[in-house]
Image 1 (cartoon, rainbow, N blue to C red):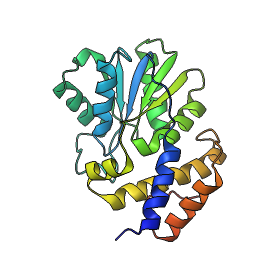
Image 2 (cartoon, rainbow, N blue to C red; image 1 turned 30 degrees about the horizontal axis):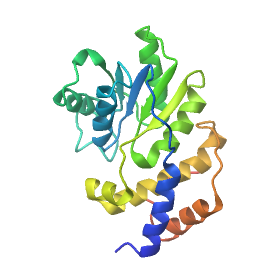
Image 3 (cartoon, rainbow, N blue to C red; image 1 turned 180 degrees about the vertical axis):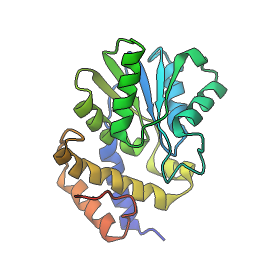
Image 4 (cartoon, rainbow, N blue to C red; image 1 turned 60 degrees about the vertical axis):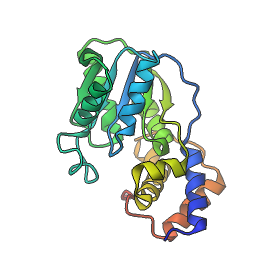
Length: 217
């Protein structure tokens, strides 16, 4: 049973992770692989709204996705996009990345190999990882403008969609931790974390939502 305080703290992390960027047309859209096919759906939605002419799906598998996406996250995203009417010519697949940094690096390399000029990227992630994705891309691909996006939904709607509240809260805590420790590793830019957000993160850790924490060493 998840306590009322934990839900309140999760909401605070959720709100902080939302970048609130105004969407605008970009050179390319990049859908970051994960357990959530909703990322593919939102990438397709943005493509159909004319936000970019080409999309890259990037991602191999992880402990969360190896059973549900055995052909790899990017390939399952591609299949979903095709089902939704996107022409195959508008999709590139990067099937090797196993973390957000590799998502950015490998997608950039693929686009360079295809000689596709990129000045701006519409970066599509899960709703609770907008800020992490943005901070990573700014560190690793500083020459392009990054617009961060995700499906527009509330925390409760997302939990209903994923159908696993424990997973969502653990993932939220993991995303927040990386914002705190990864700048020192050179993995992402540093961003200010308001004290109430830090306090919410600490309480959730104390309540045991720690299964997605990365090693701090």
